[in-house]
Amino acid sequence: MRPSDLAREHGISTQAVRNYERDGCLPPAARTPTGYRIYTELHAAALRAFLALVAAYGHPVAGPVMTAVHADRLDEALTALDRGHARMLRDRETLATVREAVGHLTSAAAAGAAPSTAPVVPSAVPERPAPSGPLAIGDVAHRLGVTPATLRAWEVAGILTPARDRATGHRVYGPADVRDAELAHLLRRGGYPLEHIATVVRQIRSAGGTDELAAALDGWQRRLTDRGLAMLTAAARLGDYLSLRAAPVTGLTSSRLEVRE
Image (cartoon, rainbow, N blue to C red; front, side):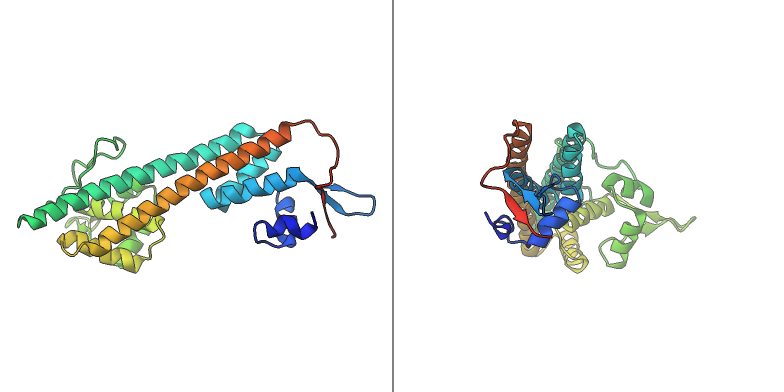
């Protein structure tokens, strides 16, 4: 294999390969007496694992996982992946919650009844029960795992419309506001812009014209499915790499790659 072969497999440059080694995402390369870096199949497997992790979890997770592996901190690497799977589960549960809420509102509108403002929370989400009363901005932020500044930004964008306490002037979030915040959080994680989310939230408030809302939820479902499949691929690539790292070293083979500085 030529130096460009490893990079070409993934559509990246040879400089990117050097950068990944520099950042600890690939194991350190040996050097020839003349100063060439020496890459082997071990490095090729590491690159496959790293890029698969990027596709599944993003750079903020993939980089630390690989550097932890190379520092022989395997439990640390696995814990980072566990957090990614936990986040995926929360996303799926939130999506199920929103779908039930949408179905509830749409059914009420079809029957000619005033849509209920109470969020529908399935029993599969015990860690997010429906609030028993109005919540402060800090409580809602903690519930979603965002900052109060994020909630204020959503309010400016027209996504949230909390009432104000007459005595203190503080924001007060009722059940409908919490529902809207849950929906906004889900769609933001799906990559939707604030303007789009504001339109979707207005639709769910009126429980009418839900075509765009249904399309948004279907799109996020596809994203979750794609990410789940990417996680399976990443697990396989990382498993292959860990097995190769554990194999006895027999010296350089014909598959080695030499990259000139």
